[in-house]
Image 1 (cartoon, rainbow, N blue to C red):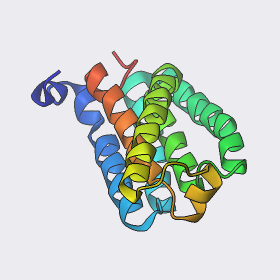
Image 2 (cartoon, rainbow, N blue to C red):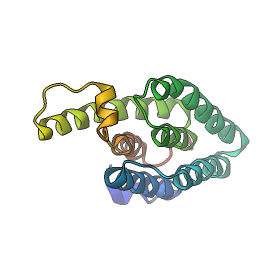
Image 3 (cartoon, one colour):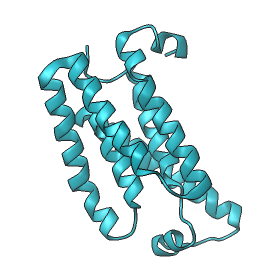
Image 4 (tube, rainbow, N blue to C red):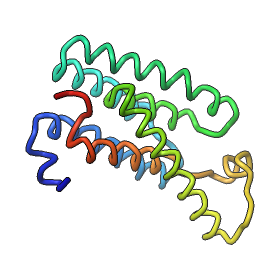
Length: 165
């Protein structure tokens, strides 16, 4: 799908704040290895408002359910130190925008992108092996980049916010 086609629909235009937020989160995470709470909360609220405005109460409920489900599923990687709190909150906000089905696709895409990013970072550092704990102590992978890739791929493939028309 061409970028110009994406923004020719209401769902495409409504996805602009999500796309911008994901890109900002990725840039901030690359620079400081942090994703600010203000950004993740704004994205969460924006996603719920967009789903409710475009799809009514049912879509708002799907967005809430997806966000809650994402939070529950990602508590384990957070507790093990595999994901930072900002990454989990960014995933939760992304789930609110995408709904459950599209979020799972974005989660898989982000996981694959994160693996590629980690391998690229290791190659750049000239190291063959690095545990997840070592990676988190050494500044880790700016995982918001992978989350942005996963989210943006889903939005571009759907031509806007998935499941809303």
